[in-house]
Image 1 (cartoon, rainbow, N blue to C red):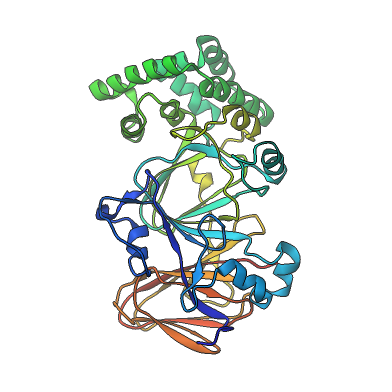
Image 2: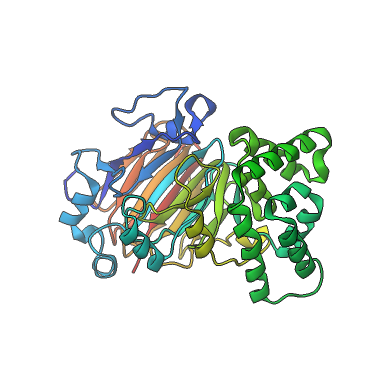
Amino acid sequence: MPATSPVFELVCGAQSYDWGKLGKDGSKVSHFAKGLPEFEYDGEKPYAELWMGTHPSCPSKLLKSGEDLKQYVKSHPELLGDKVVQKFGDDLPFLFKVLAIRKALSIQAHPDKKLAQKLHEEKPDVYKDPNHKPEMAVALTDFSGFCGFRPPSEIASFLDKVPEFAAVVGSSVADSFKAKFQSGSPSEEDKKAGLKEIFAPLMKADDKLVKDEANKLVERVKQDGAGLAEDERELVKTLDGDFPGDVGIFCAFVLNIVHLKPGEAAFLKADEPHAYLDGDIMECMATSDNVVRAGLTPKLRDVPTLVSMLTYTSSPPSEQIMDPVGFRSTKHTTLYDPPIDEFSVLLTDLKDGETESFDGIEGPSILIFTQVAGGKDSATLKWSQGEEKVHREGQVFFIGAGEKVDISAQGGRVVSYRAFVEA
């Protein structure tokens, strides 16, 4: 394959974090990474993330030459396309990942661009770049996560139902919140103010008080369910098992619990609270690693920043799920198009014997094969200068700007995800 081919295979890095699924438990990350050169599989090790892109913390490399992808696209800007270079510079503006989640990630939010620049200037050792980090998650398996604030009326009902929650935020705060939101039709501004009034004291509550009340709640849940729905009961027990006495347990009463089926997606805007809870997902984000954390984590918690940065908008869980659409002239491809410039994602799902043909996209893209049901060589990726037989799930390819490609299935179902940007 010529060095300047517009399509080439990548070697991507697997990250091991404590919250990742163990290899022996079917982590998609370890499954996809098994065919990579120099990857050493350990069934007892947590494999959390597969990174596909140019982020310096775990940059991808060209399989054939071992060259760093970031340096390669700098040397070959035609792979990015003129419009993308003019708008974003000589680098990929997105980072594509596979996540395999065994236990909850931190209660967190990502700063918008203005705040990211400020945090990077003030604390460059913690916030290591000046970019924002909007994210989108597409479920590979059944997935659950915290995503955005519950409507205030729901939170008010929990203050009645869960006295431990009321005790942590304080009785005066709880009574005031219930008086405002148990009836009537409050304005959006009143809702936002109320959510901040309840969330700030929760996140700033005394650690011993939180632990004591969490222990009481967990005991009640185990004894008689504490009047909670099954979803909430199981989550309280799971979070307490992984993070005993943590304030994040009470976030089950403040944040939406969102469930995604495979192929469903949620977009996580800047300055919105969220936490992935369990499942395997494709994740795409702007190229940044800025995270403001405040619960369910042993890492640094920046509660003042989190409390001050959030938008405090609220909506039911159903409104967190994106509506995918068809993609241009394709027949078997779904487009997930969040309201940002840095990325969109395509899901292509082919039955045996089907082919999908893509016109050139005016920007770079990264493609991963997540299912190749027919086994080795049962999927094919073709482009103007050649083709590659896909011999395993988890193979990743870079596709340069403007390049037409075909994906074919021969022998069984073939599923791929493709992150791309157009200016």
